[in-house]
Each structure stands twice: as C-alpha cells, then as structure tokens.
Image (cartoon, rainbow, N blue to C red; front, side, top):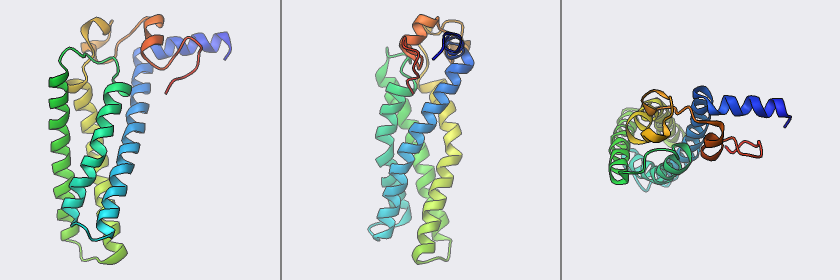
Length: 186
C-alpha cells in the first residue's frame, strides 16, 4: 500500500464513518455466518420431519445465537466496556430471546397457515424464517450498539455517547481494522 493511501485509510478508519463501516461489515459477516447455521438447522430439522416449524425455528435460533454472541463481543464490539460482563450477557440474551420468540412463533404461524407440502412447505419455512431474521437484523444492531455493547467512556474519545469512538491513529490501529502494517484486519 502506498504511503498516501496508507495515510488516507488511517484517517478514514480512525474516524466515526470508518468505524461505522467496519462495524457494519463485521456485523453483516457475523449475521450471515450465524444465519447460515440457523437456516441450515431449520431446513434439516423440517426436511427430516423431526420437528414442526415452530420448534425447528426455536432450535435453529439457539444454534446460531452462541457464535453470534462470541463474534459480537470479541470481533464487532471488541472495544465495548467490559466492567459489567454479567449485565452485558443478560441484555444480549434478553434481546436474543425476544428475537427468537418472534421468529419462532411467526415462522410457525406462517407455515401453519400455508397450504403447502413437500418442497413448497420447506420453501415457506425457510423463506419465512429468513425474512423474519432480516427484518429483526436492524433492530438488533441498534439494540446491541446502544444498549449491550456500549463503548467504555475512556475509549470513546470524541464520539457521541460513546457510540463511535474517534480514536487516535495509534489507538485505532490497536483496536480496529487498520494495523501498523497497513493491512485491513476484517
């Protein structure tokens, strides 16, 4: 990477917009990974007739929520305040349980009221589960950002309410995507 490009990226990545873009990229990647785990789980459980749509959705959600929490805590919001981990875990699980309840019962409701069988039924189950998770995706991001993974005040720099810290280039290199080598660490 050339020096001017390295300097530009360092300034961009250490600013509020750069931090937001990196966080959204990481949140999207995490969501895709965990949704893939959940979607595969619900399709397997439904296709094999092990469970109905509601129970399969419930199990599928739990299959994705553990890796989601770990990636959220240690990769997306790694600079979040760690002083009260118990509170953070409880808030995360409250949001997750609400989301799991909505997607599980709504998936069951939608598939119960569809007159489909076989592959079409599987498409309704998978499609409704996927659509519901997409709808909740934005709401969960806002809740995680504003409530669960708040940035510690001493890390917040000049960011508003500690949401997107404006860190010095050196501090940012340690905490986010721009390393001393100039390589992106997504």
